Length: 374
Image (cartoon, rainbow, N blue to C red; front, side):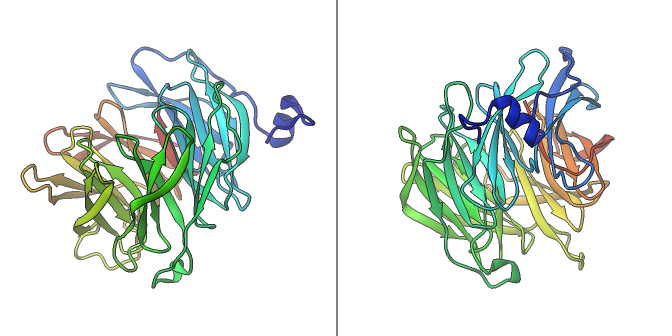
């Protein structure tokens, strides 16, 4: 973090973090896309792209240096971006977004209080950042100051437990998110096959034990990412280790989850190695999408409006390898996939009636692992 003995300019020079280069103004027809990467190779850090809202075409705007910014999130006011720095001495970095150019300028950085942070989210009141630390298997809460910068963590909760698979010798927190009412927080732990449940004390930015402290997915599942249905009554979990997707019913009054359905994210005839990665629910609430690393596909499910059960629509090639993360644009017209191992981001047009995807273009971006629209 920046201290009184180390000036901001000195810190930026030493850390390779500064003000984003090559920033230009966006047109009214373009959306802003931020791309998080791994920086052990040729990547610089966080890239900024403009996406044409009619064609889905991407145009590079600029980049800013940051170490392994493998997951990004933007605060509700759209003035600040927060990034994990995924490394053994994990950190979270804060950036200010220039409202005209969309350029990023570094504010500060604080410890994530764990090893290899891989996910973060911001509460609706913009009071804190919640972060999941994968290797150390814990979650932490960092306060947000008035200027958007971060304070040191005010709460840390260490998970415990293990699972039956090789990757589950200990807890591995992989995601943390809040419900729509901001009353409860939920953390997926890949290492112990549980979704941890907390009562969220928004006044003090604290995570407190909920009436139902956790819910188990199923042994060896490896829950990775969580996504809410727009109605707030269902929580979807993509499971990395057995390539499945589980639906939970949510009682928002009690803050409790009840397992409802689990389906495979893979075709029945697939016999190769695969791990589930990311999932998103269409803004309409009619479709659920998940990414498969190994099969290298996006699976598309339709939600039965009467039963809320998932019905397979299709599997679509990601036109690259290892789709770690993907996103849907704010209007729900395009789905973008980041292929980590082939250095490309592929853009698909979404059929609003069927949920099906059709590829429209792709762009080379080094080691893309997170996509975040402003």
